[in-house]
Length: 491
Image (tube, rainbow, N blue to C red; front, side, top):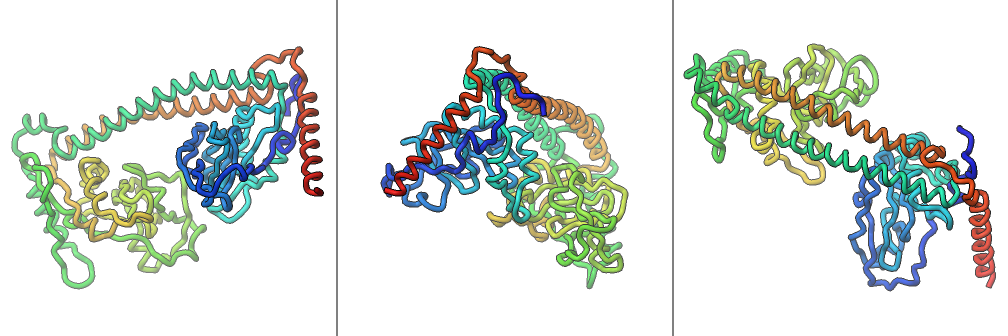
């Protein structure tokens, strides 16, 4: 660690802040409405906090965390801690509030600026370190109080604390303006992407091409008949072949000349999801278990890879193994309805129970079907109408089969997809630039905080009272409070 700047001193957080100190509840009546802060009321990484919710004091006086104006809230549970859910409590009625028990409350002692304390505990450096000290079961891990109390803190003189905080807020304000501009651009790009997808699957994107090229050798209807014939001739399922459900086009928009509606059931030759009983095969082998987090809208994401080694001679492995150009759709959980194409020409990738595998009878249609099912104002709207279960959303096979898909003539589909790829490629480059800008801004914030807590952000002033004198007053005040508490206990 670098040497301490002139006038600073090294302390632990426990020396300069009280942890979960409580409040004087005698000032409140049972029916009085008091501010209540659930975890979702604290915004990640910004320090913004919503204290508008009110609950009767009698309902929150026990079993919840109490705090006061000026306290620093630190989310201790995963993933809220890693996400940066920390905040300073703003002015409250009677200076008292309550919230979830998943907050540590840090009350800075006199002479310690709460804003400086907030910036310290919310920094990515501290959150990264805290992550490695969490205890508890997976999904319920928490930062222990003892870690924060023992964490070393470089205490600047009081006057320098104010200069540091002012400089941080000035620089952060400039970064806020840039990030606001980036968010506005990203919102415009999202709307543009949505409009491109909708124009593609409704025929608007290729209206000029149709006008210039006239009739087609194979219309959407002829294509559908060819698919149904191939589907029937290659049927390998159990029992007699059953005709797929017809598309329900009630309420759907009219299609351009030469296009036709088909049900997903008519286009799919294989629809399944993963095995329920592979737990003994998890975490080993060369296979990949495709989870819901791997399925992103129009993007297969393998940044989080889960290994599996299923029995190769079992029917479940063959049934749930994914091939290139299969469509994957999340059917259980928060991301239900997300669709992507499987782009890899490799084996040993298997879907889990939360992901459906859809193999089209005509694989060359897979990119267009992915496009349609992902588009708001198009197939995504149909999927969302079928999703059920508020707490744990689901999408059933029967509902998937009934989704109606527009079929352009094959020659128009080729032109349409070429235009979409070109437009989305250009769009992707701008989106990448926005993401890189946001990452640079986030890195700059952390660089500012690093300079702040190493004495490099603002110059030291030899005229400032040294932090050791401030610490001595903090210790004396703490000892005086302890003596009064002991006398009161003996009385």
